[in-house]
Length: 503
Image 1 (cartoon, rainbow, N blue to C red):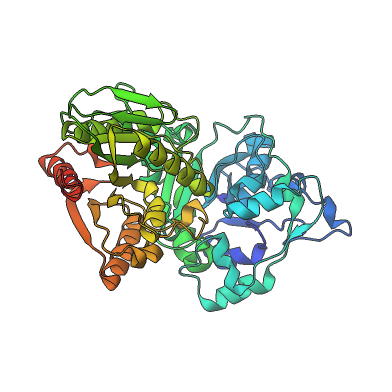
Image 2: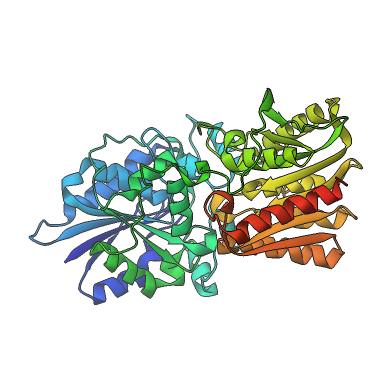
């Protein structure tokens, strides 16, 4: 027998588990939905005393109430904020816990408060300023749940119940740091990812391949993953399917990630797919120039990396083989290739990244070796949102915008982004500015949808868009899909950009 201990997320109480719990008990499993103090459980007179430790104690009390019996295992399930008290309790009762299930939640670390997982950067900043104070975060209205996660698939009646039973979140539960000793670090784990919010097993695997340090722990044999085609509340939208996932997780089922081959560099550090001239860079601040062997001021192509990328990533993006490969390729064709590092470390950092790009363009256009009236910008992946500024007010010297496998609308899984950075909203003002979009056939669905949204908006306003399709290529294909099709796409993209620069 399995004893499932279900811990709800922010603003919610035990009712959210009702249908899933019923399906689990029908199969003979034991289910305990935890009523967290002040939200689903009793609200003490001194509500301002409720903090994360209070909720950890709530989970510990349920663990201690579950009788020990041969063959019985406890599975702790934490939904969004609920993973914080789950991990705190597992750390103190590691010998009692058989598995931890992360349900569409973050990856809490020792010393980090739950505030870090609040999806809205502006709200995070506001709440951080209240550290050390009392108070509550109001529960969402019916139309406000989307701010906290995708509501796709949740029936209207269930959304009504969710809203009616919602309670404010005690502020100290978000501001108190989680403290872990590491006692539960080796426990089996399962991640349940909800695709409608933009998360997927493929996305996590790519993060592992990328070398993201916090994800390497999930490549162990004791870690499994499941996906559900729904939003952030699968216990309301797909209760039967979610119950089956929990049963399979308890049995150790699910997808296992592939650890990076220690003998191979991460995918983004593998060689560029083309042989390009070994042109040295000239570095100034956060900008690198690759200069052609040509007389007179030359046009320039500025290659803008994606993200968010960790501030600790080494090498930094301007030294990644794909970016240096494009820049050297451009220089070999007679134009100045430019790369830069910008500060897109978090989705809240798009304004900072835009400032860095502005600074690079000012530097490049002032260089006497550059024809400041003939500039192209080429964006990659998450850098695509930065296109919006240049679509909205294209200067006369900007001759072309290009984007490869771009993200062209904010992805819900990453959190809210400043409304300024929505290319589909800006493209009607682009006028005759030429656009070159390289679209990969094996794109993640959530990213592909943003490209389609942008292309639809472009067609509606008559924007000048050329689409280069690479049907069998993946996101960031230049170092992983070393095929004639991929090479041809890079050649075609470069040729299109150079034609608009009249080179």
